[in-house]
Structure formats: C-alpha cells, structure tokens
Image (tube, rainbow, N blue to C red; front, top):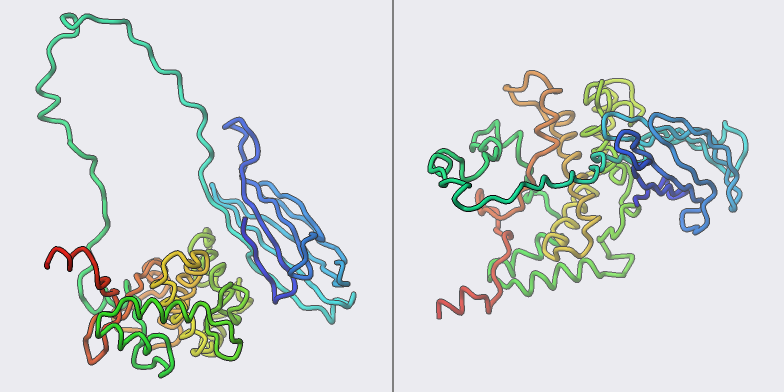
Length: 359
C-alpha cells in the first residue's frame, strides 16, 4: 500500500491489484481511500477503479473540509496511473479553494501466471532401450545463457555528463554531515562514521534536526519529485518527456520550466544529500525514504542539467537525453581528486577478517 499527501491536508492511500481469476479476464485495478485531516484513521471516501475509469469526488470531511473534483485512471499495457484533479478548502466556494492536479500513484506489473501444465508422463524405458548419451549435446550446448549486461561506460566528458551524478563537495555547508565525516574517514574509523550518521538520524531537536524521516517532511517541490520522477520515467507514453513534465507542473512552455527550476531552493537539495549519506551508512534504517531520496536526487540533477546550467556542445536534442539522465548513477564522494577529501567507500571495521588474516 502506498500513500500520497497533498499539502499536508489530504492523504490518499492506494493499493494496486489484479481483479479477476481467469487469465483472460484479469485486469489491473486500484483501490483508494481519501483521508482528511491527514492523520485521520477513518476515510472520508473509498472506492476502486479498473482499467481507464473516472470517479467524481464531492465530499465534506469530518473536519469540515470540502473536497470536489475527479479521480481517474490511465491504463497502458500492464501499468496504471491514478490521477487527481481536486479542489479543497474549508469554504464551499470554488473561488476560495486550493487546487491540486497531478499523479497520485503508479502501479505496474505482469498478469499473474496461470497454473503450470500437468507434466507429461513418459512410459518407462529400460537403460538399453534409451540408447547411448549423445556427445554432440555436450559439445555444442551453451553452458550458460547469454546475459546482456549493458554498455560499458567509458571515462569521457560526455559519459560523465550523461551517466553520473556527483555531490558538489566544494559547496557543502561547513556544519554538514559530509564535513563531519571527513575526519573519521581519514583515520579509517568506521565506528565513528556510523555514530555520526546515527546521531544525524536520531536527532529529535527541531532546531537542529536535518533528518526528514518521511517524505511529507521534505519541503515542496522536492516532496513531489518521487511521483514526478515516476510519471516522467514510466508515464510519458504517447507524449514527450518534457510535455509530461510540463503537464504535471501545470506549466506552459520551456521558458516557464526554466524559471521554475531556477527558483528551487539549493539548500534543501543539499539537505537531501546529507540524508542520503546518512541512510547509505546506516543501510536499511529507512529503506522507503532512501528510495525516494534517490529519485529526488535523480530528478533534481536532470532539471539542473537541462534547464539551468549551460548545455555542452555535444547536446543536439534535449529530449534524447532524458532516458540516460533518469537512470544516472549516483557517485558518493570518495575519490580524492582536485583536493577533495575521501569519505566513501566506508573503511573496514578495525577487527575485520582481512586484518585478522594479515596478522
């Protein structure tokens, strides 16, 4: 089950599933529940949609909020998107209401397979009747299937621009987790690095805490980036990547998009990185947030590359760059080039197996 929160006022939970039992009749469906206020345990509205469908919304919640509009689903092959077009406020007049229009959730998968066929029972044969083992089979059969592991990325300027994301250590705040990690990294004190990361994750002081803990605590527009990433990466069928982006942001053209991207708070972007570092060190501490931070970094990197910074000379078509940038690899700061201090990969523990063997 997934959830999507609109301006800390409305919470929509969703669950995608296959409706039907026969393989020929199975359809992808989504069940949804609308909650207001956000922390309410009793939904104001529930329902389900199958295939391409539209549901009108016209409710008044327990806290007096009016919510009107539509929910609709778009189905493409084995993927479904739940979209919302909602007006909401504590006043019934639409003129005074807030408005949200965008993707709430995306579900994808394959139709569940039917039962396996009954095995073919062969009549018993004697060893003599079976005949000798063919040596041709041993000689000509492939030992392993061919596995396409993708292109090998070379260390060219173009490949570095397209396929990798690096944290800008030169602009890291002096009090950032990154800077705190440098000293124990240089002395190869892994325990101290883990203690710093855990202190970052468990800081309960509202005045000093930098840990987001949940997607709803990340300032806009960053908290919308995971769903926006999914919409661009998986929901652009029949349209260009940029047009899909413009529609979800309610913008009209590239110039508006450039102005919107330029206004993004860089300080919040750096805070996203610090959270990413902490959750990298304490693996599994908050796996859901870690995945969302990954998508935020990927999308922010794409937007900065294509709509803020000057484009390199090899760029001929922005649209063609989207697939590579959406799947770029995040490089943790760890290579001490150009005066940068190494932090990652984490050093081994003091009593690691390699040290025991070397002794």
